Image 1 (tube, rainbow over the protein chains, first blue to last red):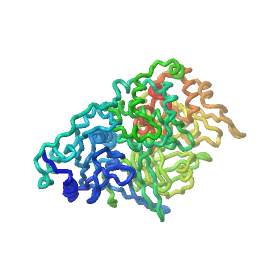
Image 2 (tube, rainbow over the protein chains, first blue to last red):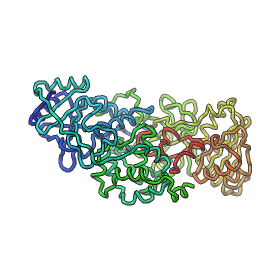
Image 3 (cartoon, each protein chain N blue to C red):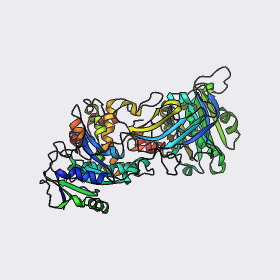
Image 4 (cartoon, one colour):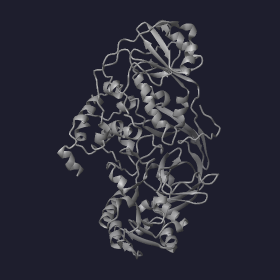
Length: 342
Length: 279
């Protein structure tokens, strides 16, 4: 396979940067996230990025359109996303799977999200296959082989010394040709695959949860959650957004959308004061039902890729794997629960 | 990167510039706005569909279209929050950003040939009015029409011209109005809508019922209808939730697996019975 020594990684990225915006996981202080790579920036590949790759296609804040409002006038100008070709470098199989989930949301059901699509169409994916999984990884439970990357244009592996590249698509082949002069033929082997210790069994869970909306499980499960929303921001599949105005001088301004979180009370608060999800209990329940029941009902897949970010970053140890196992075990006919439903 | 050229790309989040051409004071806290674009109606909604209205520097909100003319859309809007307060201050000529139409609308085809019973309360008559006037405009497609409507006081009755002039003149069209609290001039019924409904006791035979109003009214209307023998499949209502995108992507308007902006806002009672009670 085509291979480079790790010392040459910057050369490869420099070469690709001539024709593409190369988005790579870069650690610039407290949290690694996918940013446009420039010479001198160190790529973090030894562990998964803190912020998932979703921000490449669905940025935390994104302009929708400009406006200029006068007394009896209004001008609008659509913000067309940059159409430059882009390389997404170093995305791991879990985050790659999350793109499939976001594709279902943004690109199907009658409405195609212009902003998401423009970026998605112009991306070449170079996926980094995992050597050693982390303590909080449970991607296998979500149907992911962490040493494969379906949907990638190139898969990349690392043996501690050398990177190996295998093209999976024509786009990928073309991209590898561009670095022909830098690569040499060499076999690069991933460390042997280990079985993940963390497991979540979601078999039959969506069907069970459809009958558990009123179950007393939710009366206590939410209690330690502080509603900070970190899990939703760090989740590669969470996709809720808000739309806001940013006013500048003289009636000008712009509309943006930004990541929102179902854990916040304002999220569902209506003008007039009514809130259908008024307490942390309803919001906590909504988050887990959405991932494990509602999204599967609508799109045929669980809205979780087992990346483990929400587990490792939750300040109060809310653990989706533990919750899944409790939900599997809980007695659906719990008497107290049935009384409440009745 | 801003492309200043108008694009034909269908971007579901990008609105059209419209102008307010007429403002009607309905009640002390409800106004109807006539909205049009330079090319006429910004779009042609089905009865019961929604539109996102925006004063760009204040905010945007989802409203049901209460009627559409040849060249304009109408929105009856109650003053409740930041955006609606700002809307109540505008004058004719104000430009708005409008996108839509969103949602499923009323199942008009399923209603053809049937008698229709409309039960409304307060501003809840706004979405019903789009369907009522659709029936008036296509009178031969529908059977008898019956509107039962109530508001807090006579001053709070919306669409008074329709209620007392236009609709009663139509063929096979009965209008019954009630108020929670009358005044010296009020000669009509005094009492809540559900009680008035039971008093009028319209037969469920061959009828589809469409109801919209404050949640507490809907709750008791549904109880009354059940008592009177109405079938859950033939009772229709519209729901509301906070919305941002209108196209089933931003997340917040879900009730269980349903997105109200996409799968609703119109649901039958039979459908609602299967949904979690979180709205």
